[in-house]
Length: 121
Image (tube, helix red, strand yellow):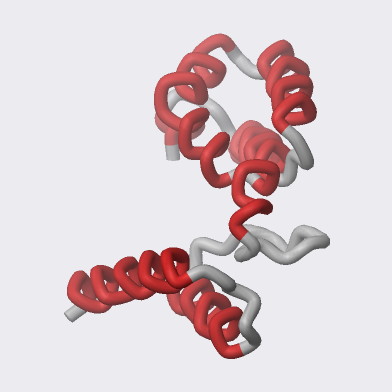
């Protein structure tokens, strides 16, 4: 991970991961902006640059406040997973329970699923 490659220790890594997870859970864009400003003051200059250049765009587009309107993230927040199988099980359950309402979202999710299956086969 970036933190250890740049001289950080396990505690630093836990701190930065916790900060990014908190940003992902922000309820609104202004809330995200306030948290980001608070965290940036506490981050090392090197990590602040790394976040701005490599992580920020993904965090903004994947955060709760940015995805809530898609009706695919349950409220209250249930967490973000990096387990691909778990993620697609969630998508399929939402289809079965009619929680995903638009054909466009269903089509997009199945396209991602097909691409993923092709990668692993």
